[in-house]
Image 1 (cartoon, one colour):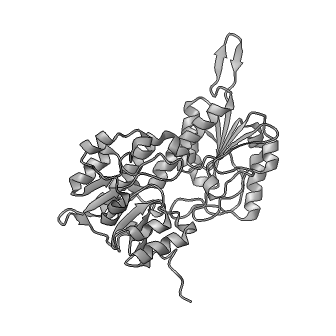
Image 2: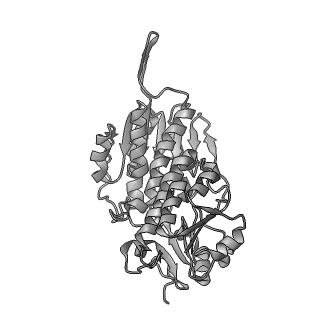
Length: 378
């Protein structure tokens, strides 16, 4: 069985779906692993190390796609590339399935089994293959590092002969995987950290990391079975904005991580809030890919407001630590493959009754099979 890993073509995407370590593990399972030359170069993995792990390099991308039984990549493919895949092949990547109906239709038409990494369930059994969490954790870390680099202030308290430097104030909105890592990173750097989340259940986690939990009475809130925050009503969002305004005005760094899976991100930081911030403050919008939490944020751009607040809109902050982002992402791919691998037959065995597969398999056997995306009968 051939596993093919192409080099990523998306601009600004240095991550890869394979490392020499995971390649060695896949070869040990019985797979023939092929890759494009330079597959890991942007994340500092050399072709020589891949070759030593048993990877066969092939510069002919079209023929490698046509021969592959299993394709790993980070980003979704171009729609016109899907027809080149072998019928019955398995394709695993981030697919953005809620926003890509044409892509899903192309996978179904090509008879390809498309697996969406975003849809892997957040369960104990699936933890090792949860790519959203592995990347979100690094994004939370990188958000603090990037903000600190632009703040032009020291984060920790410092006692100097010329006086005391007070710690920078950091406010994290959303205490999911990214938010918790941002809290931990900011605390390690010595900042004074506050955090808010609509889910009361995360208060103890926030406090355990040394941050203050900001309480805002929103009425009934909670989380989904997958651990995501439930969508708020417009009235609840207004209450949240009012409760956060004072904290934001006092903060040197604000990091927003509020995403509602499969829906547009809620707008939490308004222009009025930004106008009330100190000159030189920094805001990082980690929800920028799904519409953004911050009014005026722009994907891929730094925006400076008239009062001197910088809004970072980097949609792929984990790419700034590409070596480790690739390390953990490739491990997610390998864990997924190992889970569905039949050792005796030396092939993938896609059990359609498997709970993990039910969650992440979007197309199979020439049809869109995932209930959230399958065409509804009229």
